[in-house]
Image (tube, rainbow, N blue to C red):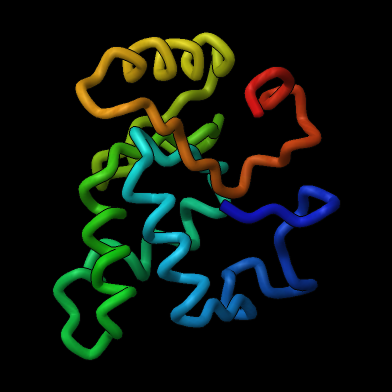
Length: 137
């Protein structure tokens, strides 16, 4: 959904994402993209940033409507985390620590034949400069 030019999304000394500010307009674009995703793909660090906020966001009346909408999308959409250290991810999430290319190809094949047009997967926090995405984006 968004990518920095160097494939790195962080602020020095703030790996928790607290520096990130997304306004309503950008968030609604993200919601639209996320609504069409068959799965969300995460690196471990970004996934761990998401866990404290999104699982309960859909039910939090204090949050704006666009965040509650994303909260519903987040909890309802299957998630795949590429990690060798994450063991119990929870929240409709699977961890893939080996055969990552094979897993991504399996996901692509599985979802191509669904009733709605295949829209793909939304990736977060997996450096695009790594071999993981060669031929995938």
